[in-house]
Amino acid sequence: MKQARFLVLSFLFIVADQLSKWWVSEFLIRPAHEGAGAPIDLMHWYQYPPAMLEFASLPVMPFLNIVMIWNKGISFGLFSGNINYAPLLLVILSLAITLIFIVLLLRNPGTWQSIGIALVIGGALGNVIDRLRFGAVIDFLDFYVGDYHWPAFNVADSCVCVGVAILIIFSLFFEGKKPVSA
Image 1 (tube, rainbow, N blue to C red):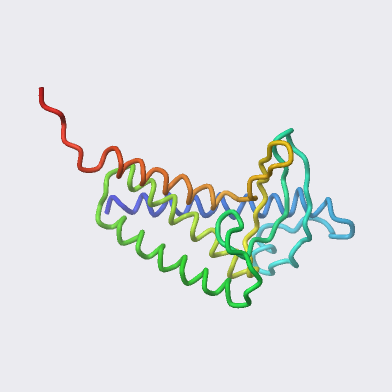
Image 2: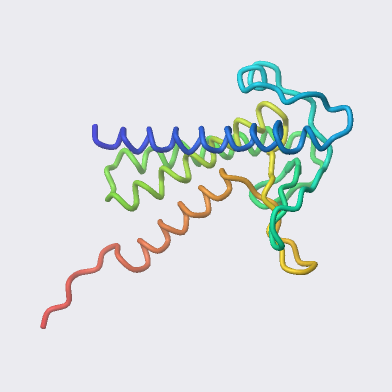
């Protein structure tokens, strides 16, 4: 099945997301916290989820901080109220959407559509893993201009946004278009 390669691509996006969250939390944020201890190796981090680190902000560039934010909402912190069952609802919703996208992928769309779908699947599942492990998603990229900060996000959020953008662009500009006759 040629679409299996796009499921492998989704898996690689999940791995990239999880590795980035582990690396940022354990090698950048944990050392910045007093008494937080030494970084935790990857296998231990997965077997025994560590306590949630407190907020931290490390300046990287004049427009970028690496931060530790626990997002209980959806991408970019939307709908992050303190509802006790919100993580479970978001996991169920994410898994339902992922299942729909897997079905779409199995219908054998074109290459660009398949890449967009793979990005959405990988991003959604990357954040589902965090919700199941921590009850919230690790967000760490904080872009800003002056005092205006874009909501913090992570690799999984980026995958979802880029994947949806690819799907929208494809559907608006390429899907169902016939060559123009002279």
